[in-house]
Amino acid sequence: MSKLDVLILALGWVLTIEGFLPMIAPGAWKKAVSRLSQSPDQQLRITGTIMVVLGMVIVWMVVS
Image (tube, rainbow, N blue to C red; front, side, top):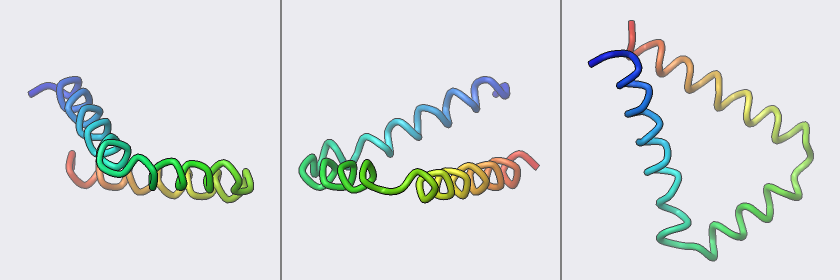
């Protein structure tokens, strides 16, 4: 399996996992998105940074 195949596979899994909440509980998903939209930009930026770093660490651990 090439690295591009792995990247596409990972993207597919992300979309699948991210789609579960709106599929199963759309009301809860709307509330969560509403709360996120009211959060300060700095808090969202920090959360996003942590998620990116964690994702990169996981990918690095799997690839190494």
